[in-house]
Structures are given as C-alpha cells and as structure tokens.
Image 1 (cartoon, one colour):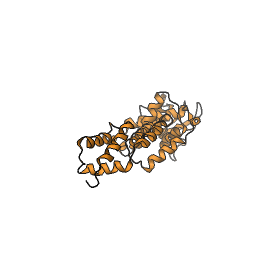
Image 2 (cartoon, rainbow, N blue to C red; image 1 turned 30 degrees about the horizontal axis):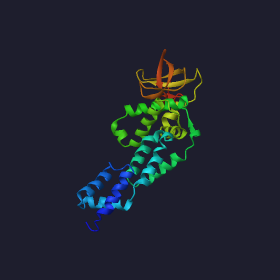
Image 3 (cartoon, helix red, strand yellow; image 1 turned 60 degrees about the horizontal axis):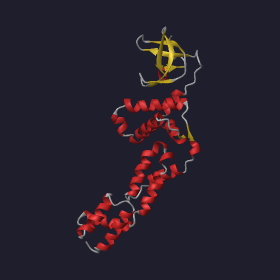
Length: 248
C-alpha cells in the first residue's frame, strides 16, 4: 500500500477508542493493523483510505447522539431515526431522504402530538388488519407503508400520543377506507338498497348505525336490517338509490 503510515493509523485508532468506537468494525480493523504493524491488502486498502479521509469519529458520534434524541418525537419514524443514528455513528454518509427525514422530525413541535380520534383509531385497525389479510406479494411492493402501519399500531396500542403528521399520513394513504368510514348516515333509519346474491334480487334495507370496520369480512360495514334480520353489510355493497329497472 502506497503511503503506508502506521503512526497515522495508530493515532486514528486511538481516536476511535477515545470516541467509544474501538469495538466497532472500523475500530477493530484499525487496531488490528496497528497490532500487526503491516499495511492492509485488497479491499482493506480502500477501507483504510476511507477511514483516514473521514478522520476523527467524534463528530459523527456527537451527531448520532443528537439524532437519537429525536426518537421520542419521531412517532412512526422512530425505528428509522434510530437506524439512521446508528449509520452516522458508524461513519456512513446519509442519503438525501435520510437528511430530509431528520429535518422533518427535528422541526416538529410537540404541541402537534395529539390523541387519536375514534375515527382515526378505527381507520388504524382497518389498515392494520389489511396488513394481516392481504397477500405477502401485495405488501412486498409496499414495505414502507407496511412498516409504518405496524409501527403506528404498536405505538397506539402502548398508549403513545403521536404526531398529527402520522394520522394525516394514515388518512391519505388509506383514502378508500377513510372515505367509507366517513359515510354519512342518520343515527337510525337511513334506507339503502342491497343486492342479495342468494335471492338474486335487490332489497330495501334499514341502516341501524354508523360505519365501522368489520374484521369478519375485512371491510367497512354498516349494521342493517335486511330481509328481516340484523346483519353487517359492506358499505361498498350498498346503494343510495335503486338502479334503473330494478325492483325491490
């Protein structure tokens, strides 16, 4: 290795130990070079050059601590913020989206942390249920959404008060569920029309309550009196008006 300077490596290894990074992979690598007294080979050459260019890890350790301090206000981003802090501590250069996420969380005012409304909590349960019932293939392409819904569900289950941003994200991401849960009906007595597949005909039904998420059918539903029985019927299966030419 050209420019091999064991004293420079020794000084850097000491700085890693002083910063509490002596047992990281980079710290152990530097200490092993000093102990052996020989320059690295192969990929170790590039690794050492990169560490020498970055220099004293203390600034990275200090910044990692600042980022970790954001975890309590990170809401559903807590795990990502913790991971980013770990990357900074190990000397990685952050991507633009990671810097943007840090800035977003840093700018949050704790006054924007609010308890969930009953509607938001119902939407959360519906969204979380979809993570359990939809195919893995569906979620493989939406891992960011999957992780955030699960994080939101876990935090809410622990009774945490979360940023309003998290609830706004939930409403925007699950628009259809949110719209169905906000279906306007009277307290009791709204009429709707429902096509009963078993009888091959449209039925006039009576709505008896507000929309709710029914895990049995995996859809937002209304409790209705239909064909003489009280049953849960998905909102999307109901019509406000009888289709033309149909008889009920």
